[in-house]
Amino acid sequence: MGYVLRSVQRRQDFHFDLPPEQIAQTPAQRRDASRLLVLGGDGAIADRTFTDLVELIPADAVVVVNDTRVVPARVHAVKDSGGGVELLFVEPEGDAAAGASRWRCLARARRALRAGQRLAVCAPGERDAPAPGGPVVTVAADRDADGSLLVDVPGDAIAFLDAWGEPPLPPYIARDHGPGDDDRDRYQTVYARVPGAVAAPTAGLHFTPELLAALEARGAAIASVTLHVGLGTFSPVRVDDLADHAMHRERYTIPERTAALIATGRPVVAVGTTVVRALESAARGPRDVAVGPGDTRLFIRPGTDFRFRVVDHLITNFHLPESTLLMLVCTFAGPAPVLAAYRHAVAAGYRFFSYGDAMLLRRAAPEATP
Image (cartoon, rainbow, N blue to C red; front, side, top):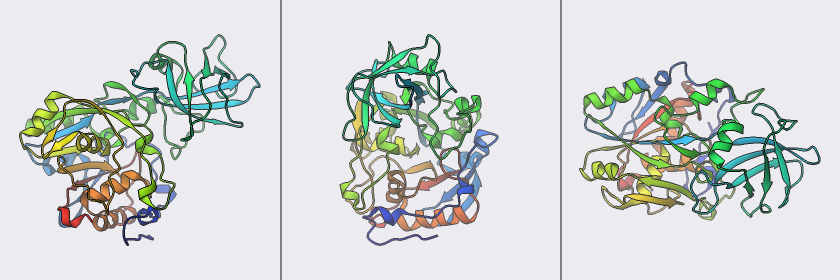
């Protein structure tokens, strides 16, 4: 497998080899039919199914989900010269609401885009020709140091994206003719509510209304946070020394009910790494999180003095090699146990990444997370 575990301070320490056929291209037939790898606090590994979650987490747990809604953030357009452009709308500029008309985007084009350029938008599913009578967006500023640029759209950006955008499937999910109707449904959690994410909080894709009801019937409380997934979550690490990696800002909101439930001392189960980052960023102390909006650039990785103050259990998918998400999971449950679990998952044929299978992990003792 090629796992390396030395000082866990370098990107290569989190590399693993994955056969391409284990990258899930489609979701499971049923959301809750995915496999679930359970990693115990003692390092023991068990192969279960996602519906077993009801009996695997504490009966009185506070299960915290991320209720962000993925917007159809990928837009194709054409320059006046006829060249094609692909835009990924990442976040509204400044502190504006998600529906603002100026957004920060990542762009793919044969030549760099410049401020003032007008781009005629294609209909969803089209690539080479603008939609007759369709909208035009304008590049508002040249490319920034992080590779993004500002784009102005006519009117409310969320309404614009709902009409003209496509689901922003990650590049490792191949579609010959763009995302299909099934992707619009399945690349979205059943509890998605607040529009603004440009990638799905994928651990939540496995939940069904019936499974959530079964958890509540057993005594769990379902609570929510909102963290709009953006560059802070999926931007790759390009430096070897992790101390040199800069996280992008992501916005979150902690509701009063969620903070109150956490303050009771009941076990906290985070559904996804985005929930972990929101709760731990808002933590003022053990079981104490600040209510209201905030933003985070928190980079949780082994080898630092970071300590979890809120989350006890984590449900998460299998993440890309050398990603900040894998580093967070290694910090949560210990680098050696997590990387051993990944080795088991590859050998056992688990499906990886956004449409893949899931893990359930318990937080390691502080001395076990160097």
